[in-house]
Length: 282
Image 1: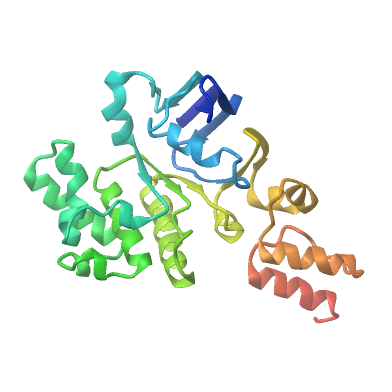
Image 2 (image 1 turned 90 degrees about the vertical axis):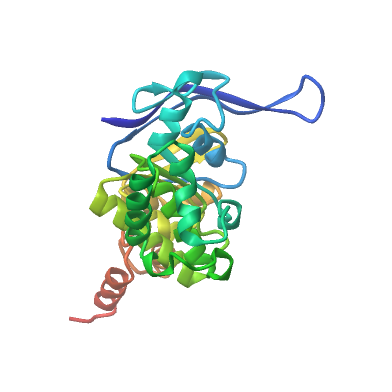
């Protein structure tokens, strides 16, 4: 079943001058299956964040269609069902935190959706447990670390019980520990709860953890496949202004020196093992 289906999507932003527009997409097609973990990559200005906002009807197509679980995002009567189905997590968690107590913040979205109070209590507790923040439920959000705040933002989305979560560069403002916390949470939600995850990121090591990587360049899908295949074409990634995970970049540079290392090694341990063997280890 398709969670998201984009058909011939066209979108343009208003330009600086009257009557001027800046085209982002003209004929974009993309399908994301329910229960998958998809990373969308692209250099600055590629259109990846603009695309993500179509999945939650924050933006509407100028042409073509975007369907969320079969619902047309351009249909005003379907706006609430669409946003119940697809939750959004943005780059800065401070922009999504609206209350002075963690559990009240997580309850905000379901309250606005009209969920009954007893069910809200259940949803809030369950969401906080899923992101490992239940013991912080009575804390003030502004006293938490960046990674903890982002997990609270994710819990707020989970409390809406969406089928899909779209994360737009959720770790861009976090330190390595916070990035790791968020990625572990996202991966677990996909793996254990079957929630569809769409991750917009510029961190290649995060994208490497996805089931599928989609690369967008100037509003066009330029690569689409499993991470091992997409990143192995490292020269093409560089041509698009992107890097590959550090393990792939290392093997690529060593191959220039005469090694013959595979370029589909995404885990540090696998890369180290291959290098050990190349150096004559048994």
